[in-house]
Length: 191
Image 1 (cartoon, rainbow, N blue to C red):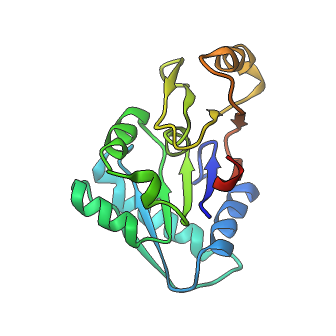
Image 2: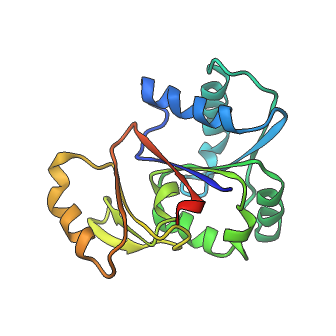
């Protein structure tokens, strides 16, 4: 069964809820498992810095396991192999369109991620939904539709009007609002 851990944004901020995020992943990943970090939503010069930051977050959890950490390569055929060989796919936030465009090129993505742990932060969460509210552009956009949901990352009480727009947009689907420094866990079988 595929587990989706969808985060509202800012996984690197020191916070108890972010610590819980990394603990949740550690609970679910097997010992000697592989985590593939997909940083396509960010400038490539920052990828090594993000990897070091993410490794530190995993290492400070109470659950300790031997893990392999890898950064996804931009090359399409290689990315498919990397996703297939990973136990956990970690999609960093940033530019929604860059990430969505790149992941849309992966053939049979839904099939490839079956049975894996998928952690998506902000843009990384948005792309799996059918529709999402894109904060930077202040509009509703279409995701890859792997999860039949609507999602609103970086949500807070000041965004009620935008949430109402998302509710009435296109078809009626479950809506998940995820504030920054918070996350939800969805199991694919519930859909």
